[in-house]
Length: 147
Image (cartoon, rainbow, N blue to C red; front, side, top):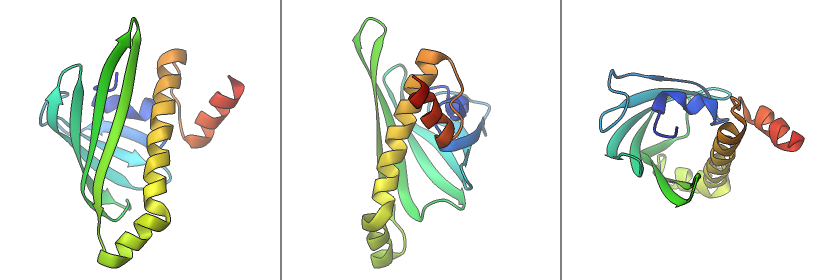
């Protein structure tokens, strides 16, 4: 599920739409566009791929996304039991804009990135357990509240 790059919109409440930009749909070189809520667009390209275990995405800003560079996201899967898998996501990035970017990161960007990871993982859990497309963050909150 996680390695189906085109389907991230189904469980990530930050992504309104996602689609492949390459014919290749998995492995090194597979790439997707993610259109973000409420606006923005990024290109994610697999630069490392261990089928069933992990993959690393290089993330490039296309429009109206955070002022970051050297941006990567690594998904790791660890089977912990029958029908149980632990999923982790690690983001690494440098801020653009020098000192101002570093200040912006301390003031709000880092916490936004961390909460985005938590929301993605919550959305993935809901999607896998309930079979629903999560939608935006408000929809995810409603689903979690109803549970």
